[in-house]
Image (cartoon, rainbow, N blue to C red):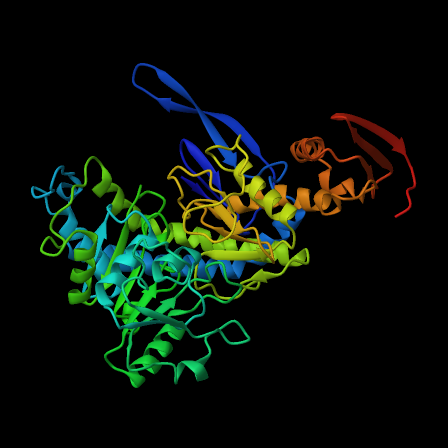
Length: 536
């Protein structure tokens, strides 16, 4: 093996490794012959040296510059991934996870091979809880949270949301929006109040310090932003809120909606005193592998109560089938979660950096420490929101040929559009985005198995935002330098023009020539004129 300061050359394969985080794009392959002496004959084997640099970067300049500038932030995320992976691995070892735990079961699930118990033990240790129940029978995060709330609240109790309005899908569960007699907490005599957020979008500590009443049985803390334009909460902030709540009433239970927050920090809410946490396995803790499911974790007696709401009193946690390969996918997805969450965090950093540079409001702001895997961008119009979601769908591996359409979705008060060309239906740990069609027309981006997926989305999004903001005009002047050397992007631009039935486009070039691109009656004419001067 030959070694140099810039590359490692092996007997059969050589790999050049550049210390620069995002190497200059070139691709070279050299082939030489390696002759292995034999007693009776000689065998000639091609020795191939690859230099993994592309001639043309797959990203537009804005994305390349943003990625280069985020090197230190990406490195910090890698450190977080290593820390959380170590935590997960320790829990797997302590539970002595073996391949026999992956066996499925049918019917009542009484002959289950110990996988449920091992998975619950692993999950509880990871999140710092006394107990946990991780089940495929939870079909969403909202379902898991609902089981937890109904487990601890009784008629005459009050539920207090301390981080403003909850996520849309909980409104009918609580009774904030009419459930039409379908059995909301309000229908069962549980009252509800909210502590509004402070002006800066964070918790209002002053109001929280005097918010509890004698009938307040449970305080609900939503960790992620949901569809609100606010900051997501750090575990430290959640811990501070819990202390303030317990000072007013030590018996008040604290329930945390942990969706989108798992593995974004190196501790979880039970470490700082949360009595219960709940979430979905097709979000962070499923690692893009789990096909379904959710979890509730926290104090053992409360977890048992939530399990009885999932099943029935007296049945508890020791029943329910897990047919096929589900248990293996739960264990594997949980192990991969820190890595997948890390890539999703990098994706949010890249989105914020690029979109903020284009003048869009983003939350969180660029280079701010993340506390969930969601990046919100205000697109300011219905058309831009629809176009952004269409771009995400086109870059998705599944259903890229389909067009997402806004509509009424169960649990949501407004029209919502979803772009999720995912392997697991509805998985937001995979590349996805969504948003309600209401002011300020914000898109909420999450997931992605590698940050470069969002780089490809941003390429197409930037192309559209160079074209589409002027959709109501007949004359548009844009700079085609952005498209030079990118035939695919130019082709997409033409398709967008045709699809939107735009009338006339005039393209002003920063080079020696200009192009006039006209789209009328689904017919495109491209004229190249040398040194054509156009008025801005």
